[in-house]
Length: 157
Image (cartoon, rainbow, N blue to C red):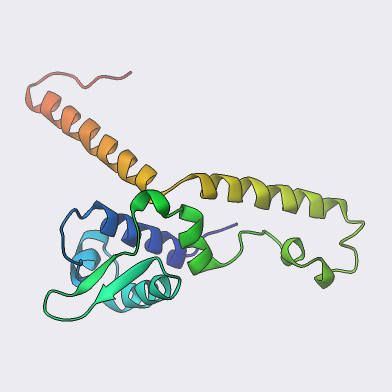
């Protein structure tokens, strides 16, 4: 499976929304600036995410987008399903009727195993997991920067 920019950018946009601890919706232009995504493209992605029930929009001067539920309840698989569809590497995995050899094809078992492994990983991870990773990365980066400013060598553990 190869993710398109739709899937990758949608996850980045959702993470951006999740990281904003503000009480009001986030404007598209702010997400665009932070994530380096074009405004028009991000609008398309957010509309798909809205249709999938993952974000909600608010109109008006303080309008924008926000998550439709808590980050720990939004799986990465939910986002990718909305943007990319199935994770199956071949069409016959989702619909055996597409291939007359599906019932005797041993390679179909490989494609099925790939889909199951991919789905297992994506279903086990939530936006909350990404938030925790982001915060951990930021803390490590700040520690490294502080050590460099103090002329100490960063840890190489």
